[in-house]
Amino acid sequence: MKLQEMAQLNNLEELVNIDEEVIGHNSRREYIKKGIEEERCIVAYDIKNQIVGFLLFDTHFFDCSFISLIIVRPTERRKGYATALIDYFINISPTRKIFSSTNKSNKSMQEVFKVNGFIESGFIENLDEGDPEIIYYRSR
Figure (cartoon, rainbow, N blue to C red):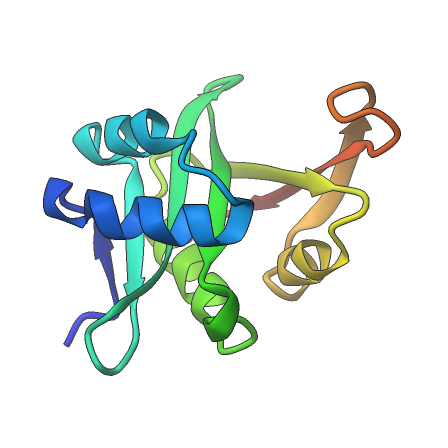
């Protein structure tokens, strides 16, 4: 059984449900749908073949890969799914340089990046008031 693969349109509702479970609304439905249609969305399965998380990426960040979203069901966190998604993406990344970001307040995601070999590469102020965005980098 493959534990990570590109998402299919028939996964959309399940991915939107996971996203809604995490952020409290389904405002990213079209964003997720577009990522699936453009083959920029990877899903992770548990051993029961249930989707437990997903990753969205693009290559519009100065012609480098950018992981724009990693979402794992709250009940499935700290089980290696985010790492599995990142590993899978690194192996298929269309560019050598890979970036991502998270808020300064998101300590758990910062740890995920550090454990997966990303280093801090700067920050951006004024996206979320009082909570700078930390940019992370690693190469393939």
